[in-house]
Length: 186
Image (cartoon, helix red, strand yellow):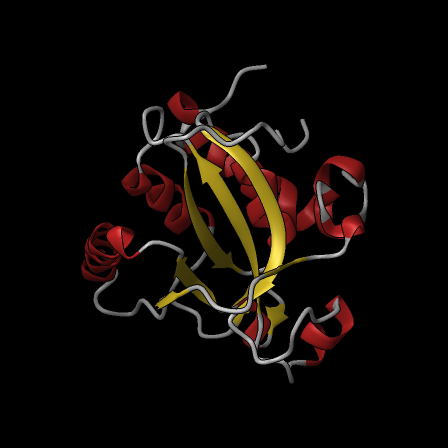
C-alpha cells in the first residue's frame, strides 16, 4: 500500500501529527479508512525547509511529523487522534523507543483553529487515562515542509530494512489488530 495522493475533497480536513519517527506514523495512517493523503515532513522549527540531517542534529527545533488529509465524513478527528494515541507513547518526552531527541516529540499541530476543541478534548481524555503523564504538545502548525522524497512511503519501499521490520511493522500490526474496523481495504 502506498500513499493515496488523491485529490482533496472540498470537505477534507488536515491535521499534522508528531508521534516519533515519521516512518512509523505514516505506515499506519496510509492504512486508515478515510485518510486521503499522508505526507512525511517537518514542522514547528526555526529553519526554512530543513534537511533530514539538520533535523536529526536537533538544532532546528523541528519535529518529524505526518500531515494527514482526511475525509471527516468517513473518519472524525476524534477517531484519527484515538489511533494516534494508541500507536505511540505520549508519555515519553522527546523519545519513542530508542529514538531520542526533540524531533521525536509527541505533538498535535493545528492548521485550523476549529480543530482545537476536539484535539484538546482527546488530549485531556488520554491524559486522564494515563494519570496525567501525557507530554503531547498541542500547537498551531508553523513552518511545515515535506521531507525528502526517499522518506515518503518508506515502510512500503523498505519493509525488510531492520528498523522497518523491528520497529515500524509492530506498530502497523498493533493498528491492524486494535482498529480493524478502521482499516482501508484495497
